[in-house]
Structure formats: C-alpha cells, structure tokens
Length: 150
Image (tube, rainbow, N blue to C red; front, side, top):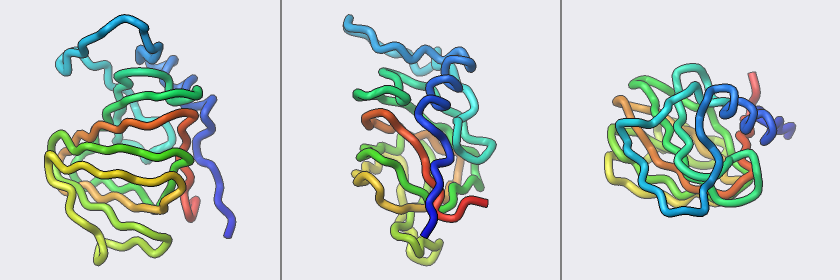
C-alpha cells in the first residue's frame, strides 16, 4: 500500500519559523504562560488545527513538546507518525480509533485529563467532539503520513 509523507520535517520547521512560533530549545529553566502562547496553523493537518510549540524543534532530532488546538467537529483521517507520542488531553473531548480500518464505531473516548501513549507508525484517526487542546511530547524529526492521501 502506498503511504505518502504529507509533511516533511524540514517543512514543519520552516512553517513554524514563518509563523513566528518560538521553537528554539533553551538550556535554561523556563516556565511557559499558557495565556501567552503563539498559536499558528498546524502544518500538515487539515485546515482549522492550530499549534504552539512549547519546547524544542519538531523538525530536528531531539525532544519537543507542543500543544494542538482543534475546533469542534474537526477530524484527522487515518494517519501515523514516525516517532512515539505521549499525548495529554488538556481540555475538550476527542475520540481516537486505531489501525488501518479506524472508524467512529471503534473510536475510544479521550475526555479532558486523558493520557495516551501512541507507538511510532501506529495508524490512528481522530475525531474532535468539542473544542479541544492536547499536549504532545515526542522526538523529532516529526512528520504526518496519511494512509489514503486525497
């Protein structure tokens, strides 16, 4: 089955830089004020998703942390990522189904405060039932592959 990388790691880094999102990791301790996050369109995802990078650079090797903000009714078709993900739902309500045959019928709820470990290359599909913010920790370079690019 043909699988196409939708967003190359270099494009992710460039998109974050062009959006004015601070992505350079600093060696000093840091506290991030959620009220001061700089949200930008999320590269490689359907329109409507926004991202704020908290730490690191998703386009380069090494750890990073980011928040993703999704509007109610949003959906990401079946996709995978090349690295493991640790995801916490900070607010809202989402559902996720796993495998190449992911469907709403097999989706598991992800209410606020849910935590999920998603192994590298695991196919999954996401549905957003209410405005939702998730925090994602992973290692770069990060990319998104759609199972059935359209």
